[in-house]
Structure formats: C-alpha cells, structure tokens
Image (cartoon, rainbow, N blue to C red; front, side):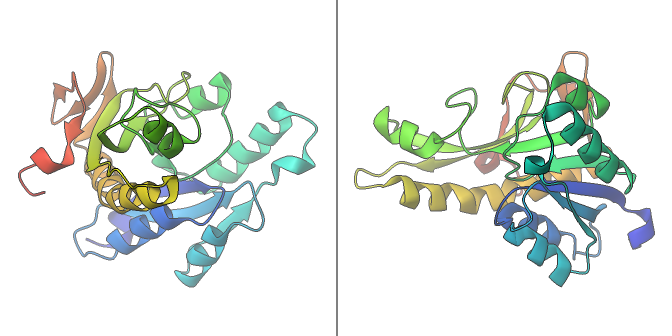
Length: 221
C-alpha cells in the first residue's frame, strides 16, 4: 500500500511516546492502512517529539502553559491538528482534559488508550488504584473519545494478571507491553474502514460492540 493511500493520523502526546512508537513501528508494514502524519505535544520537552523526528514525522508543540485558559489553548491545538488534515486523531498519553467542544470537532475520529480495564479506574494513577483495590486482573482499553472522561465506547481490551508482589511500576510495565499491541491494531481497523462510531456505540465490521473485544480472544492474537 502506498503512503499516499494511507489514512493520515495525527497523534497527540505529552510524554515519552511509547504508544506513539508502537504506531510508528506498525506503520512500516507494507499493508498498513494508516500513516502518522504529525505528532503534536502540549509539552516541549516530551521525548515523543524526538521519536517522531527520528522517524521523519512532522512535529508541533502547543504549550498549554503559554495560554491564559483552556479555550485559546484548544483553538491553537485544533489549528495544529487541522494543518495535517487527519482522518483520525489518536491520543497517546496526552495528559490534558479536552472540552466537549474540542471533542465534538473530531467526534467519531478520535481514539484514546487508557491504562485500565474501563469502566474500572477512569482518570489517573490507575495501576496504584488497581493494587489498592486488590484486583486480580488489570489491563488497558482502546476507546472512542466522547465528552465523558474515559467514558467513550470501548473497542478493545488487553488483560494482564496482577501478582502479589507487584508495585505500580512493575504492573505499569506489564500493561504497557499490551498497550503496544492493541493500539496499532485498533488504528488499523479504523483506517481500513472496519471500525466506526455508530449511533449505538462502536461498530466493527458492521456489528455494534455491546462489550469490548478482548485481545486474547481474537483469532489472530
């Protein structure tokens, strides 16, 4: 598949960008239906910007600390995103809560990956909270972004066991390895036209997902 035929994806980051790297690595496959068109960060020191630069991907920084409030920041962020005409916006460790107006601008073409088995543990510090709750199973979820924080229709999850001697850091690393598998897969589904946001939720191959798919249950997992 030629790069010109691939769906352009703009990735929003705030930090190290390991999920961004997974998306970049996956797009090297000849049959990959998407290409990362640009990476936009709200932090100028985000290492993900270096990852993008090494891959020859354009980058932009919209530093939220330089704006007096959320509205002008999101105006500048939307302008940066729109300059690259994305078919999909992928949040990959983007640590800013987006307003309903911004979300509505990209409704149906914005994905997020969250480090928990949603709806469990929305928000921050998911690994510590999972350990404190005595969870036996933890994981990650890819979902469509809606106005509800971490509450959009869930698409795909990956589970990991929680071990008695886990720390938040050890558990986070185990989950992150699974994140790197599920995010490129869901982005591929969207770019190939298999996945969409329908009136009743996420639809894959024309069927509404009443529950998120599980990575280990997929035929090619």
